[in-house]
Amino acid sequence: MNSQELEALSKRVSSRVALVNACACAAIAGLIAFFDSSIVPGFAAGFATGALNIHWLLKIARRSVTMSPEKAGRFVTLAYPVRFALVAALFALFIVKGLISPWPLVAGFALSIATAVCTMIYFAREESFNA
Image (cartoon, rainbow, N blue to C red; front, side, top):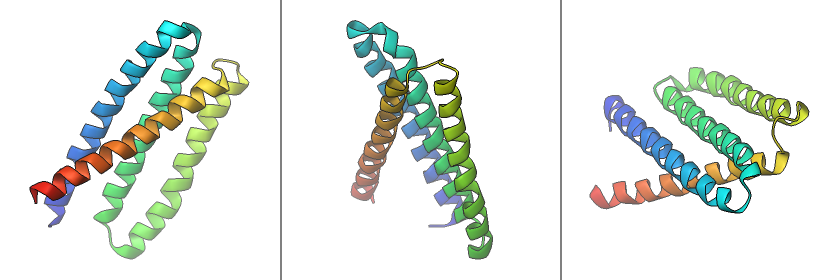
């Protein structure tokens, strides 16, 4: 697979994961609203943060694949901790300022990651069957 095909495939996977995450967030937040609407903003913020985190991870991976191994190693070694620190700082800001309760935030974040992983597994299987 050449770099253009790999780029197209990774963009297709990223866009599909983003779409599934958006739909899952809306559906789950809608269900939660029936039981306790006060936790929906925290859940949605966590889910959105998780979805952006996954999108950023996929973008880092996509960029690193096109680089030489030495350059990719340096890039990933810098990009991953920066991404982690920014997500952690955002969570800390939400919690310390009292904007969002921690548990719905963490639940949304975790479900976002689980949704993304399941979506990628599904699309990888689909891709292998079509190959």
